[in-house]
Image (cartoon, rainbow, N blue to C red; front, side):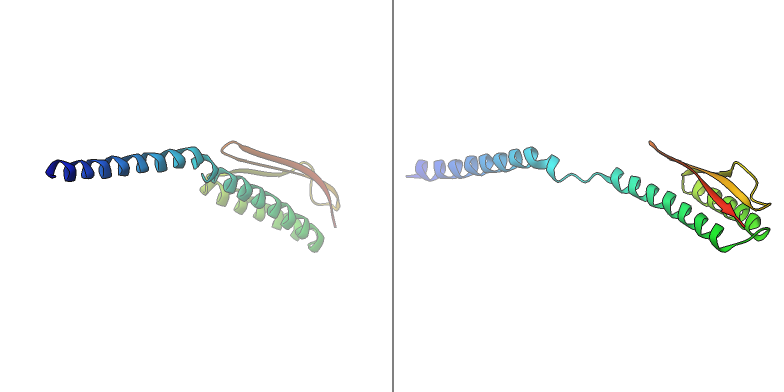
Length: 127
């Protein structure tokens, strides 16, 4: 009788180990389906920053006139480049032509962060 009770405990322990092994195996199989990829968030954040800066520059050109426009552009360029550099994001904003006197101005923007590189150039009209 004593031997029978002892073997029930072994059966319970072995069954418990097999159940844990089975659950761990299922977890390993489906692990890739619920892993979080944090790089997607960073990519979207960099794109948001880039397009938001472009939108603000277009707005500035529509609302300001020379010579205030030229001073505002220089200030936005300085502040944006230094702020993003402090966050580890390389950003370059430049105008290929003079903002004043009024006319067409080619703006170039380049954002580099990690393995992300976003570039755009566009033409705006200063007034």
